[in-house]
Image: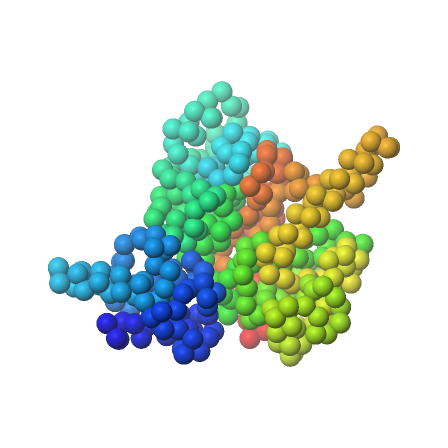
Length: 83
Length: 319
């Protein structure tokens, strides 16, 4: 989980051109001006890294970095267990 | 030349969009249109229409992205949406451009995720040519694709504007200005003051400082850069003002000067997204047949001007 979170955090920080310290699990996307395109790009980058396709969730259900990362990681583990 | 038209996007889809496509086919001798939309809707709308079937093809797309949907989420969920399918035609080389009157956000997201961005460009802006007192129009960039922007993105818009002005309008050293609420250095909000500082350090950009909204028409700059929220509000205010003045003049004189016709948004087709690896023309959501026809003509112009190669070449020179 920590490695997955670190990857996601790094991708988003680079996209938004902000310091890593500005993003933690409690960070609300709107507080760092991350719009839906930024978030989808982060998800797509994670898909490339982990060679997986995440389900098309409503992003509105995941307003924070932590809530989204946890949901994605849960799906990743589930997919890995099934394969 | 093949142009994909998203037949399902916009307030007047599909009827007026189809009428615009047929109008374009009748007015221009060459080129093919690929209508992208729900097969049964297209078939029903086309029955009884007279057109050159050799120049009109249909491609089915079962879904539509609505105006109120979150663009990026909708794009992931609706893989068979008309804007997605139409943009993929460009990506696959089956069309040379895509034209849409649908959700600008969805079109921008489709362009970004499907066609891909040019190196050094984060978000594609819309460039609109505003008639001015000079021999060339003033380019307003971004006219509405990116509501929230970061300073570096505005600098990228300036680079793309420069590439477009040099490559398409043949302006050797275009004057780049930042749209602001005053000309003095230090004016504006965080975004404009930070952008100002970065822009003035750019060696290859002829940055002339801040300009105000009224300067769009005064030939004081060739490119005016702003975030998409400001640009879109400005654009629509101009359109409203032009219509208001035109109506008043027509009432007094019985005719409308041609200068106003150039600002009539019901006739102006659309504008290209820049910084992406393919031509994507954004049209007004309220477009009727005249505007759709003009939007298709702008797509043809972009294809003929080879705007992608022009941008790539100019961006390579800047890097």
